[in-house]
Amino acid sequence: MSRRTLSANASKPSPLRSRAGTRSAFAAVATRLVIGLAIALTASGSASAAETATASAGIPCTLVFGQGRNFDPERPDRNRYWDEANATFNLAVREPLTAAGLPVMNIVLPVSATDVPGNLRGLVEELRKRGCSRVLETTLFSDPAAGLLIARLRLYPVMSALGPQAADNPPRIGAPSYTQQREFALDSRTVERINPRHIGQQMGEEALAALRPR
Image (tube, rainbow, N blue to C red; front, side):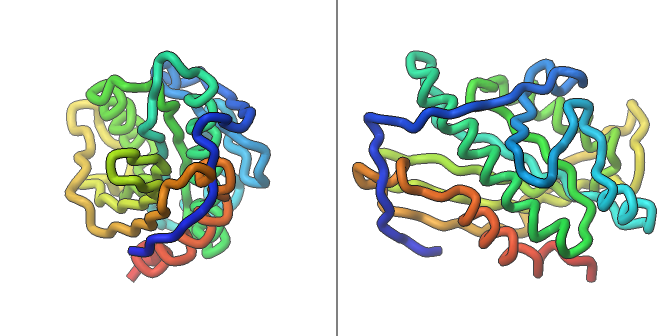
């Protein structure tokens, strides 16, 4: 793990945007935050051409699941900041994975999605429908008590996920098999100057060794 000093201004969050997808059961309690990167997911969650081609070759997909942790019901502007930062980070992690030919699906929840059991049920349902064999969790959040801004990836195996699952036999998410974490000193300018896309691309590249088929 590395510890670095970046700049941020916690009192003046940057203006942000988010987009909500609502066409699936999971999206009823989640938000698909699609930022205009060259890897757009549709609101219905359809796979890209690269994903479809690779999946048809028999390689199970990896579900790249992201969510921030800094929800503040009294600060919607701050919540929008963390939603966009986490969506950018999540989609940037995806870039080196798809470039390496790995089939990937993305889902990003807003920080306001605090129903953890409901989130887990929705995630399991997506795994059942997509037949993904792994979950790569992405999160970018601040820990004021520790004085850190943390970027983290965790890879979880999905048990019995070799194809579409029956409703009475849902997939199970196992213990994490891989963790990558970067820590940055949380000074007064960190949040403003952090670059989620750059960090996500770097961490996605580093995670490839754990994700490539063996």
